[in-house]
Image 1 (cartoon, helix red, strand yellow):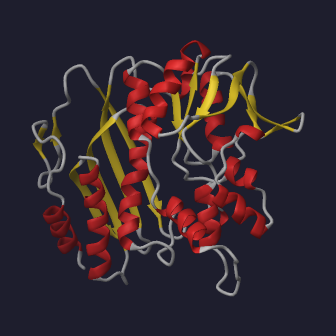
Image 2 (cartoon, one colour):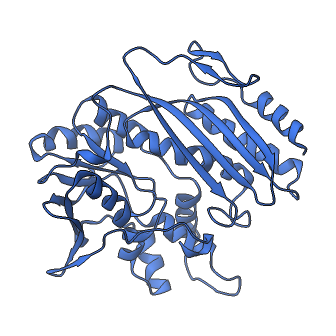
Length: 337
């Protein structure tokens, strides 16, 4: 598919899915012209996916790649308590990808945009030797209530929305050599791979925590608990203690870890792309926060630690403390996660 054909197909498939009254001009001009709502701030995030670094087409379908391109950005909007509105898409495309690939990829992008009522309003395409995808997502947040990394306070409790380490477990399965046999059931295998390929951003949770003013500090878990909590501590000029026994790890990840003889705790702390939400809460509002969060999640959020004085993130296990500051995922080869 040539560049002009790709642009035409994107334009054909990317009908406006969200609120259109604030789109003065969308695709087709040098710039999109957008009108923000009164009494709201814009939230802008962008994410770049590079073939063989962030994804491998041997492991992910074109449709799922399109979905994940959007979902990773939606998770960032969730982390600030925002509502996603508009997207721009940049593609550096390489030779060797047929029309079926591009049709499936565009369908994955547009179906997911439609699910979240996001309108694609522009972008760019160029030729390249490596497939590279960049999506920018623009949303809206409530002034003075948006969630931020620098608002954690000493004494706050630390919560996460769901199981950690599942995505890293799914990637471990995908990275197995063809000759390696893994005696894991189809149910466990499918669950973990799905958690890696099709994450579920906690958008409604972030919006609720923000709009009700229950929480000031949050971050999405894209690089692992150890690194993402380190970002919060650095920005908030504080430290943190994580209790190993409190970290939520799924049965499936525990089963996989036994088979591979690896630590499930390492996957939970240092594996990336769980896209769960982490937030800190003052104990004085804990009961109300837990009640409201449980309504959305269907289960109680998981209390995993506490914000402390000093610097650094520490893991408490068997009466011992170990520093784990920034010991999470680093963006290298796809196979290093």
